[in-house]
Length: 256
Image 1 (cartoon, rainbow, N blue to C red):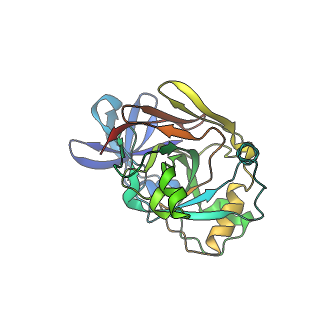
Image 2: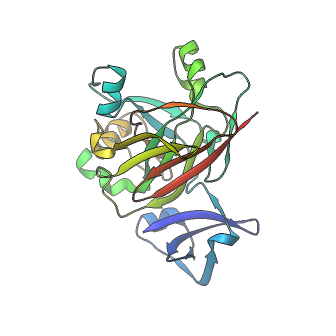
């Protein structure tokens, strides 16, 4: 089932996709937890609405170097445990929104990632129980000012500019997160292509590891790392991140 948040005549609403229409529901987090409250007779056409980020996370917890083929591409050893960093909620934008290229950077890169949507408060969750706190999956583009990352020697500033976390367009609840084709196209040309089966740490293992450090809240996102082929974007580009069971997250790049 695919869920989304959208704007209709200025009002923010939630819904699920039924054929070519959107059926309105009361609350997307409740729906992810199995409490689907449909607002009767309220359906919408995609032509008349604006798709929003599917959740409003308190934090985006990101995992570095989590694909075996990406590690091989970089000639780096497989990490013994996940490498974590955060992106702020102020960096989140939605489908068809614009990534703003900051003036102080000369290299802004794309990174397609599978996003895990947390639907329940989670602290010290075992990997075997992690599925109970995962509401579904979405797409993340972990936009990065690569030159600033190299300059700073750590990742916070490079990952945290406004518009540097495109998210969406939907949350898919019925898919195997470890058997998904994942790709990214820049101006129609494929730059990244892999499969989530090549992740080093699986999504339930990541929930266990992260929740041992910090409390995960409903709506939080875990960005599970990017496959090989990361590279630069420039103003005027169109970037499309795709995961086969979820859809396409499309964004545009412009100068500041």
